[in-house]
Image (cartoon, rainbow, N blue to C red; front, top):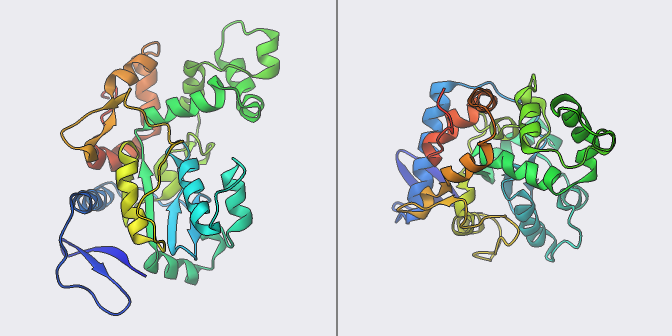
Length: 308
């Protein structure tokens, strides 16, 4: 099984028996190394708390990989791809997380013994993808509330409308449908312990614990098609790339840069969606994602919409 490690400032390819003495760095490998180094530096600087509840770190023994599934960061697309590789045919149902739990055994890192977890984290290729926190919230609102999902309307929407809408109609209180973005943001802003919140708006650091788990790859959501090739190169598969047709990545709302690895969300998109929300509220919302900004801003060039 081939995997990549970062050692002594060099990005080296190694297998079970020998390590090549020299490795030609491609652009993507060089960028991933820089991100990895940035993450290590930020972890050493901030020393965030570890998170014992890691239900979204998935394991495939067949593919020899560990994937931290972050909702609204192309997670459904990734699970569809990984299930296709694991089962050798595409999943027929859209509920890919449930299909993973039924078809991949054991499905999660937490299902293994402490000894096996240590072995897996040492030997398997580990990766996660990152998205701007405020952009991720927009996606969660659009998917779960703007395009009504009944579970989310009943589970959260009724409470959001009751707490944050002035003079709500009886129907809105009953159904919880069509929550406004500012109502969802107020709800997320006021969550007392966001590390235990719904995974669609739980911080990425709380889902993946990237300072406790040394991921081999921190991928950029905004450059997923290019960077996914590095994943396929390092897991137990013969394919080199696969389209991410459902990842919801569009040129509109994406900031173009001198190099694709620095792609990020267009600031004007955030301004457009958050224009009706007070600066004070945005600052408090950003504070909910303080660790995400601290760990990922340097490596992925995320900038807060409003500086503290």
